Amino acid sequence: MTTATVPHVIIIGSGITGLLIAQGLKKRGISYAIYDKVDPATRPRDWSMTIFWSFRHYPVLLPEELNSRIHEAQSKPYYRPTAVEELVVRNSETGEILKKVNSPYAMRVNRVGMRKLLLNGINVQYDRELIDIEYTTDGVIAHFKDGTSDKGTIIIGAEGGQSLIRRKLLGELAMPVAYPEVEMVNINVNYTHEQGKYIAENTAPHIDYGVHPKGIFFIIILRNVGDKDDYSTWTFHYVITYPKKLTGTPLKGKSNAERVSILRSLADDFAEPRQSALRWLPDDLEVPDDSVKMWSPVPWDNHDGRVTLAGDAAHAIAFYRGQGLNNATTDAAHLVSAIEKATAGEVTMADAITAYDKEVIARGQEEVALSQELAQSILDWEKFLESPIIKFGGNIPKEMSN
Ligand SMILES: Cc1cc2nc3c(=O)[nH]c(=O)nc-3n(C[C@H](O)[C@H](O)[C@H](O)COP(=O)(O)OP(=O)(O)OC[C@H]3O[C@@H](n4cnc5c(N)ncnc54)[C@H](O)[C@@H]3O)c2cc1C
Image (tube, rainbow, N blue to C red; front, side, top):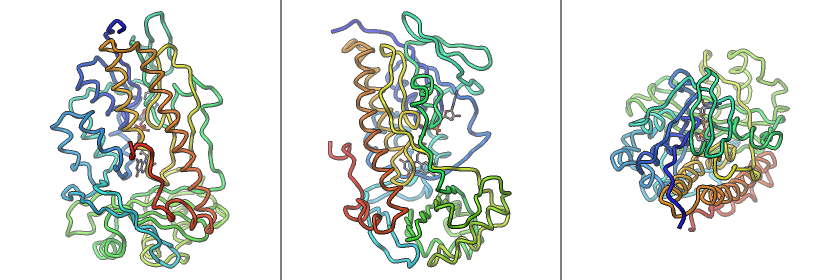
């Protein structure tokens, strides 16, 4: 038995990871402060995500009242997931269904809705950009761009895929791997009632996963449904990746209108409804800059349990297997449990964080390797047909079998 400590936890980043950690600490009465360089409400980039195998961590992290309201963050807030929630995988050139992968009770949520829900009861201090960390004999000091600082027992880097804390801990080794030969598009699209109805009625209810033999990934997901009977209120979320050589014109440096026209030029390659979905892209659609990046974790020095990473900061996982949030949720649950044990005096903070780091690094490495393998196989049709998602319906992460 070690001596119980009374920690003060500094969380950097108020994405879903940071907020889940804050909720878990608050639930246990552990002192924390959470900072973000910006209020995401001022730049609400939204996309939808599937929560599946990480479900079981939500009741552990959230108060009962919030846990019972997760459906509010769903693409279809009125929907209740069932034992049969299929991910439909297609050949998007022909429309043929290649595989149906069942993820019982999987829930489609959107990022803005999840953040809004998780903000309940959490006071994030915005406009506080972390610029440096200083280690002291008994803790750590976070220094912010506005000249302020906060002293804590431990600092958690939950500041996303470009994490500063990761870069401070690992230097060059913290750099994500980019895929410069691949174009990435992550867009939200609204149509007229008739167009939206056509797309909704010709795709799987929540998520329609399309891969084209030319190496194009085109997933159609529902992000938001306003009025379920008025399809002009339905927002569709498309994630498209394709080899840049297919269009010969990179999106970077182009105007929105030019980007829309480049995307429409891919339409002929697809079966319906993807063909129309691209042809009908609104002229004024915003097509933000995006790129595929992944980072596989390598061990970092946690300075005797005074610093660690969680979520996309700890493992930058591309969207192909829909695993980033599921792993981020698992990180939050494991990290809160580690801090709780150290607070109770069951282990030292150094041992608790070292055990957490070891597990998160191994799990992150495994998942990033699987995502990289799938990303590569999407560029090679024969390989894709032999990939785990087609052969076995996706790899079951170790977590699911525990
Ligand atoms: C298109 C797409 C689809 C996806 N689909 C799925 C899916 O189906 N299933 C799934 O499990 N996952 C999915 N993901 C992954 C998922 O979105 C992320 O894993 C999840 O949102 C966790 O993000 P985060 O909180 O770790 O980081 P972020 O959301 O990036 O939050 C980091 C926060 O840190 C702040 N910050 C950054 N630097 C600083 C600093 N120096 N000081 C202070 N604050 C800072 C930022 O402002 C930001 O608010 C998808 C991702 C994408 C892009």
